[in-house]
Length: 303
Image 1 (cartoon, rainbow, N blue to C red):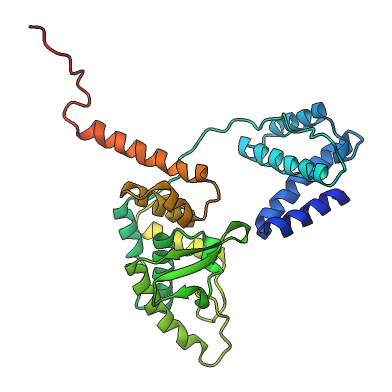
Image 2: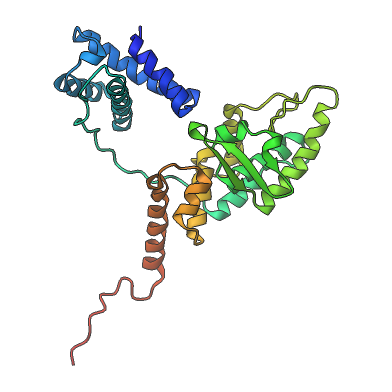
């Protein structure tokens, strides 16, 4: 049973930060771990001291949790204790000096532009589902939308005339993103075909729907993308991989980090900087492979 103060905190962050349900459940699960540890210590979560919290972190790691998962649990606990201080339940933060375990930085996987072309050509656009899928994949790559943002997209969110869309990202933050000419053309074709589905039924208003008019789920988008990736001979292709590809290709072609940050809806420029590591590595590899003296010591001959 989650303690009352934890429930108050979860209600607080849901309202103040507008967290999506998945994010809220993540916080809930992590704080349930904290509550369980407090019970094992014969205390309430707000009564735990620094050494007991350090032991909790050690226990999570010994349990086999990945460093990233342990770090997320610490972040959840840190937010909880800050809330308790703001609300007057505590005067000192017991977890402030406890650092998360270091995690190796993994670069996001992305597709080459030629791989994107192969993927986008796989849907059979002579069918409704194929046309819908082509439009969805084009839009994911053209805008960098998260798959959750894609399935929540409504017709009213897309301005076909101006080539813009509005979406609500993490924290319910709204942003406007331009739609490239290719994606815009496929969206226009799909929307025209979509209209015939609702001649004799109420229109849900969501952009991407099945042949029965029902809104698509994230799982369906994932499965359809996987099917096309296999057909194209591609591996490790996910909706988020298309988002990574969107950002990487922009930077490779000279876009600045701040613009890409705005397009992706990142609140912190540090999150966007991960893509600059990719482009730097690609430039380094290109240089090493193609410059005539990249591997030459270049020593001057003695006269």
